Image (tube, one colour):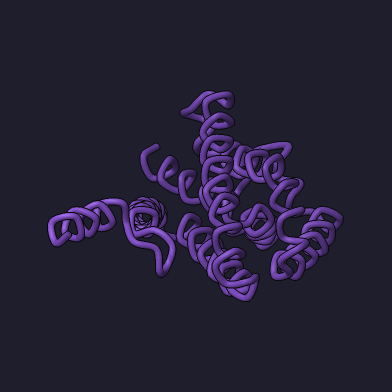
Length: 210
């Protein structure tokens, strides 16, 4: 149960980074007989499902690299990512034999939704800071991370879980540093404008000289 749960965490987090990669990967793994998915999610390995998932994956892969379109896709992803997280967790037959389906669904919803919310909040910062140039780079990193987490969740669940923990820690550290630098810039004021404390001190010095 612990191994299956760790794998579920990896798949749910991967759905937050890219909702279609875990679904497509599980469908392929089911098709080749590498994993056994619970019904009705075993239909992910059917030909129609794989074709649809592959098409949507390519559209999302390309669109997420375009600054204007990626925000629209992120808005749609606020619904798709949690749903994908719930599906990939509930699809694990071995996990559902030991965990209630509702619990598995909530776990997937929370993981997929929270990770997606984090990346959606970070993307406008990248757009504003780089003029949109950094968006494709961030998107590629997210896609690669989703692929790695998905493969680890299927093959080595423990490493997938550790990867999620590391990713969350790095995100928290980066966010705190960003807030600290932002606070420092606000305290310093615009370039060429003296901070209130400096202005007061200079005023006091000038008054003493007079």
